[in-house]
Image (cartoon, rainbow, N blue to C red; front, side, top):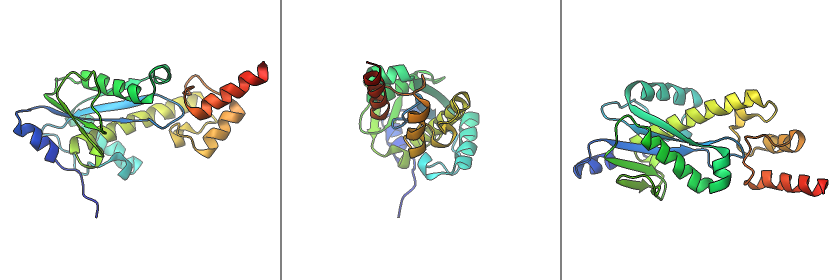
Length: 210
């Protein structure tokens, strides 16, 4: 039986003297297109009912919870763009987005709970990495929901600018239809050129033109 996220990690942080605790998560490591988005959320007294790992929620439920988070919690979103992903690699770009999200908070947290197995090097404050944190910590779950909703909105908008890739449905992930569209329609400025499926098409195009 799966357990739901709770405030255990937040309570442990408070026991050490931390008052403002931010949950931090990112969305968008795997897609072939679009930015990677991170969110930082300080719940405080704001505790929307039903917070969970964003992957366990329907799109409608995520939207509802994101609205409650934005209305009642301290939050910020950071992003790393496609050119930064290609230059830094996706791992470092996702950490950059996390640092930007934390830096954007209206109040500086005393402690950050980071989803994953590593704390971003340049975060600049005490932090704890929590593996599968979005399923274990309510603060990280809130961040995962907000990051997912924000990124999905971005990809819907980009999909309207570049029809045919199905970004409103696949959010830039390498689905069969997206990969086929890459072959038929070509590469957009929003595709990650360092990712193998995109890189391979670029190499074929260069070989064909030489």
